Length: 257
Ligand code: 3PY
Ligand code: MG
Image 1 (cartoon, rainbow, N blue to C red):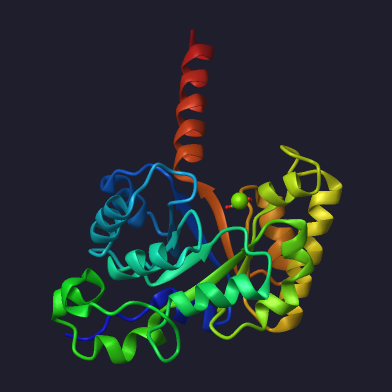
Image 2: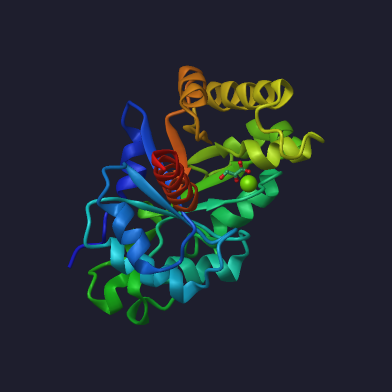
């Protein structure tokens, strides 16, 4: 069989804006429910959700039946963890808190086989190669991986141009929540100084010619940051959407008496 194409990487190369959802509920059924709702991509959140490599594989398997690409966010861009996630079939990784070109280069190397990188080789026993059924997996895998570095701290913002220039970095994604904390404004992601810092980060990423993404869960912020050139936007989380819908329903029932 053919090596699975990385549709998220193809989306990045096309003009236009894509919208995705974060999933932090670890059950495979949750990813499957979201896969059929019409979004352009899903992001499995291994940074903040209680995931392990096995539960991430189960969500990837559930979503594989649907026509939607998946990004996986590991808790850290550790070389061994990156290898394990790629081996279970993740193709796009969103690595949190990248703050230097050296850090980005380490993750880029972890995602590619020698001589391009340092990824360990075991194609016949991993899901990425469909347990050995994919022809030419080892030769083609480097072309289908996609690295998105998350910019979400003052040092990360300062290093945007250097990080974007690293070979193997495909896109940068701005995290307003952690950036607010790094600016001394924890919990105030809508503070004018935070919004201005996100504006600046997006404009500078766009100026490098690298695709820019951002987390923006409110319509005005989606408009603001796509207006500055962000082309892939995480617009919500499963927990947030579920909680809001349940809270609204309960409130509506209470007002009926
Ligand atoms: C942040 O805003 O810090 C994020 O990580 C968004 O996903
Ligand atoms: Mg963050």
